Length: 166
View: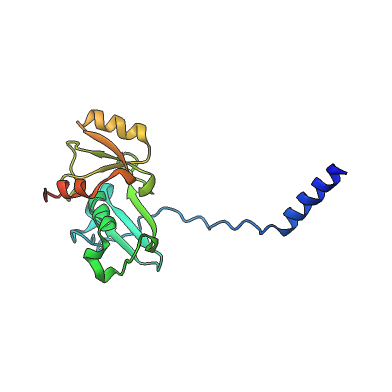
């Protein structure tokens, strides 16, 4: 009797369950051209493809940056560029950086960033992005990097320091 009751409960829960809805896969693409300029520093991003970053908003607007530092500066203080219309973190659909080693676009929130290396971007002192921790560690050792940080660990004060504001 117990087995029949368990079987009926399981069957009814499957019958009433909503079908799983997966979001469609969106490939990571840096779709800029020779005229695309970065928002923060107004540099043409195609000149340094290894450093390009991009934020796609929920409304479909694409915002490019000449470096990860510039993208994070915007991400942390979008109100400075009020004309873009970002009101909350929910306005960000996709955030990409270019993996320094592979030169492929990667999810910025899952990337690892080397701080304090002897490698600079077109925007000056910067954070060098990598798709995995081991690559970031190796790069840090080879280029005098001070620290490897995850996206969530990057404080606004560090961006200010890299920009020479501290």
